Image (tube, rainbow, N blue to C red; front, side, top):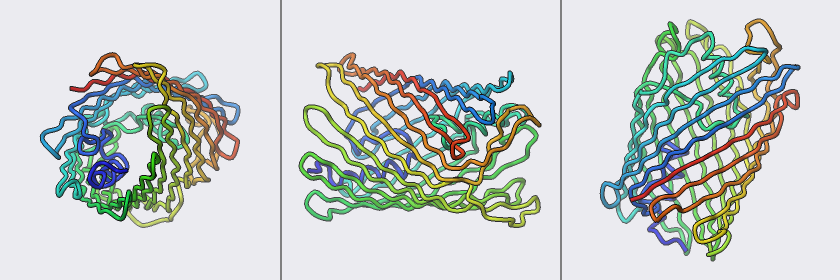
Length: 388
């Protein structure tokens, strides 16, 4: 059975509508003040048109959580990464900080109403070099590659979320909410002019069902964006997106199973010419199906293991991939459907009552561009967390 009133607006409305703030909220779990950091190393090999490209990322995120008082908490998130891209003897680098993100959450009416507000502080790396750093960033943005950090500095921004929840029956809770996100203008590239990203509006609805030791959750998030502007002229409009998620988990004193199925429906993007005249609509990013599962079981009083696997399948998109980082050399491949399988696991160790450590490894294999691009990679993770 659900033990928290309305499960705090259905798990803070799917963790603040798909990770506005990456930290979980105290009003969901009742946790004390806590902090977490980790070192995540990713290595990807992309083989296309006879050319091998490698992309590596060493990323360090920091998360802090502070319960201010009953039903009110603050979360903090920041990250840094070092990235390297190699192909045909060329090596390009992109290193720097991401923006600092702060989020405050307050629940009312016995956790039946949630109000959340956040800030994006522009502390991250901006004004990237168009000769090398932008090439690395473009490769990092390929959606069939799994990377924990894809964004660096942006402009000042904020978000506001309001949601509510209600009891729908025995063991059944439902919730819904809306969120508005604003991102200010900034200069993304050296001598590249001012870029003003479109603002976002999202609607979320979900239902949670508890039956015996099983907990089921179904959520839907629909998001739209306003038009991006470059030097005050309309340049691009992100497509609308529908994000559907269904998950199940089991409880008990022994092994705990969790599973997730996610399907993302993406619409067409709109492109504009240099005068702001609408040109065409094209589906740059294909629809995506993700399946994931994990089993967490104890190996002793302080040690537990967690084998896991995930599968991502993305349909054909309108983007192309250049098989070489060297200008004028290489072929362009249309990014047809892609499939990537990840298999791995982790170990968690309770160092003391307030400290935990963990290590994880995941191996990737797959293809993109309907088989014309071979993919392989791995991820290593080491993390520390503390609570007070």
